[in-house]
Structure formats: C-alpha cells, structure tokens
View 1 (tube, rainbow, N blue to C red):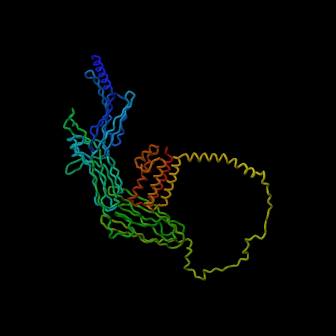
View 2: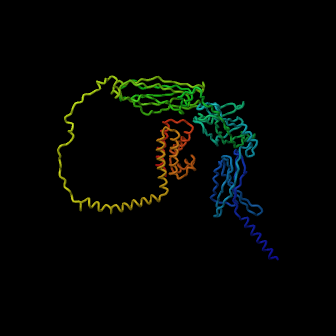
View 3: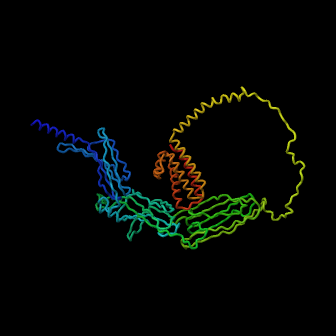
Length: 590
C-alpha cells in the first residue's frame, strides 16, 4: 500500500515538472473590436527565451510603435519564472474584419507559431482607447476643414479646395502627421498647387482664435453635371494635450493622444451649361477669353511659306477644349498645326494662352482669301455665350506658275495649236540586227553541276540545326507567351495610331496595348492589375523609378480621357510616350 502511494507521489512530481517545462508562445491583443481611430496593442509572449522571432506582416495596419521588448525573470517560493514579450502598437488602415496572421520563433531548435487572431475595425469612436478626457479635449481643439470656393459651379468652371488644419493655442500637435486617406477627384480635372513650406498662420474657427496651416490646395474643373462627391481627406496626427502637471523646470507635461481627423466628404452640385443661346460652333470653352487669327505675311511668291496662327488667351479651361480649325483654298498646301500651350494654374484656375500654328505653302500665283473663323465660349460670370469672329485675310501670291484651270483670258481660237507632221514617226523601230554568237558550255561536270549535286548534303546539317531551334522554341512555353503578347501589344499600338483623333477608340487601344505588354513581361493576369502592384513589380525588376512613373501616368491618362476633352496633340504625345516607355522598360527589365 505504501509502495503504491510512493509511486503516485513520484508520478505527480514528474508530471508537474514536465508541465512546468512546457514551452508557451502565444499572441494577445488589447481588444478584438476597435474604432478606426483607435490603437491596438498586440503582445507576443513566451516562457522561454528564443531566437529568430518573425512577426506577422500587419498588412491591414500601420505599425505606429514597437517592437518593444520586455523580460521578466524572477524566483518565488523556490520556483523560477521567466517571461519575454514583444509588443507592437497598430493603427488600422480602414474598417472591416481582419486577421492578424501567425508569428514564429525558434526555442531550443524547435519552431513555434502563435494562433491567428481575428479583429473587427468599426467606424471612429468618440473616446478612443478609453482616454476620454484627453481625447475629448483633442477632438474639440483640432479641426480639419475643406474650404470650397464655389459649391454650385457650371460644367468646366474652375473651383478650388483648400484644406486647413486648425489647432487651438491650448494644445500642440507633433510634426509627424501623415495623410491616412487622400481624396480622389474622379469626376474632375484636377491639379494640386505646390505649397512651399507649412507656415503657421493666425485665424478664427467658429468665432474662436486658432492657429492653422494650409495642407493642400487643389484646382478642380468638373467634367460631369449633377451632384459630384469629393472624397474626404483623413489625417493621422498625435495631439499633445496638457495634463496640468509640470516638470522640475516648471514646464507643462503633455500627454500624447493619437487622433484621426477628417475634413468629411463634400458634394458639389454642378450646373449644366444653358442650352438657350448656345452657338452651333461651341466646343466647350468656359471662362473669359480673347481670340485672334494672324499670318506672318500676306504677300509672297509661290513655293514660299507663311505661318497662320490661331490663338486663344484668357482665363478658363484652356487645356480642356479644341481650337477651331483653319480652312483655306485647295490651291494652298497646309501642314498639320503645331500646338503650343503657355498655361499656368493658380488658385483662380488656368490662365495663359493656347496656340495652333499652321504652315501654308502656295503653289500658284493669285489672290487667295482665308475665310473668317469664329470662336465661342461661355462666360460663367455673366452667364452668357460670347462669339468672336476673325477678319478675312487675303494672301497675295505675286510670282509663280499659273494654275492649270486659270484660262479665263484665253479664247477658243488662241487655245488651238497647229499640228506639224513628223516624217520620222517610226524611227524607234530598228531595221537591222546585231547578232553575236554564244558558246554553250557542257553542263555535266561543270561548276553548276557539282554545286547542285552537293547542295542537298550541305542542307541536311542546316536543316537539323533549324529543326532543333524550332523544337526549343516550341518547348519554350513562357517565351512563346511573351512573344505572342509582344505581337498583341504592337498590334494594339498600331490600332491606337490608326484611331488617332478618335478619343475613346484611341485610349481603349492604347490601354489594351499596355496591359498586354505587362502580361507578357511580368507574367500577371489582367484581373491582378492595380497601379501599386505594377509599380512594385517594375521596381523589383530594376526598372528606373522615373520610367515607372511615366508608365503609371500613361495608364492614368487613359482613365482621365473618359472624363476630359482631349486634343489631337495630346493623343500624339501619349502615343509617343507609350512607345518610348515600353522601349525603356524592355532595356531595363532584369
């Protein structure tokens, strides 16, 4: 009986020692549900020291703190206890249900993993992370505002959006803020105005004194009518809220509170241009403009050249409409115009001039009128249409041949010509021969005979080599796929060139060419396409960042063309840029 009791005690002690020696490696989170403006703490704890700790990717979060390492090693009642913890502080990127994947570590040569943890991110909460007092103060004293110059513009009328961050003098903000969500202006032509330095200014917000900085300035031209939504700008900042305590030097000790501030989404109600009084030649110009047609000379000789210029100056959507075309008599040879833009964009919109220069070469003597040209635009300030018509210009060609159909001064009698008989009409026919004898060479055993005899034997090894190369080429599945896609890319570029001048067909063909090229070179499917992935893959393959930016900008131009008027010159520039960029990527890909 005593033996059985001793064995039981021994087994109990052995089991206890085995349990105490068991390795533990687990992940713990501060909460499994949090607001998008809160922070999440995750701890990876282990009861034995290990090596090669690998955290999960945290792809759905931004790491705002950590890794922090803490070690606890103590003995109590004769029992030794050890604990080591890696801690991270995470900020969710967006709302949704996410899974934090496994972390790994090696302990005593064995690999251990934590269990995945599911986390739910909801909309912003009023008191993030339970720090009610400091968080409430920060939310009351910090405001991100989007100031819009006109919330009810006409189609293609310029408006501005200025983003300002207002901060009360009672609190501070650390300098390491960042944009969490950047607004996208999908239904607008947009251009950001460069801000040189963030100057702290004094102002008022809801009747109270505040300091503020201007974060963004953007000029927008709406391309659709009706209510258009502007996505919010969301900032991730750290507010420094006073605690009422001071340090030994008498300075206030602040507490740092993470804050997510947003300007909120805004809706712009875009009015259509009035149909009443709209000129038939209206091309979409909105603003206040002047119009001029001029020539470099009005008197010249045949085969000399002159330049005719069609120019629009003023303030408005200068880059978003086409200039009227020049029409001249058929006796004047006219070349495709050179397009020139001298446009600057500031908070009041586009200002400057656009110009088409035609080169004209007359072929015959005479006077040639260049008909008057009209240009129409809508002035949103007066809410009226205006038309400007140029004067007729007469080009006087003083010297040169007379046109074939210019026989108004000739009579029928003068037009007749006397026919003189020619006695040597058949002189081109030879009446005598000059034959020479040709000696025939025997074909058998001649050079030609031996060449034809040996040619099949020489062709056999050549055919074997060609056959092997064809087999290797056929077996190269990836290479065949690349060659096929290259042919498709060239085909679509050819179709884009044929469709020059037809906006939708041109940019559809150009986009298909770029997609097929990427499918060939990067081995990805169209369903996987997004700008971030394309940029990452090209940079990984050692393509220069400038070339990658050009490629992304061409894709963006293809998207922008759906909402924006595009000129022939712009299409040609995009085509040339696409061909050049594809060539550069081919040279740089590794």
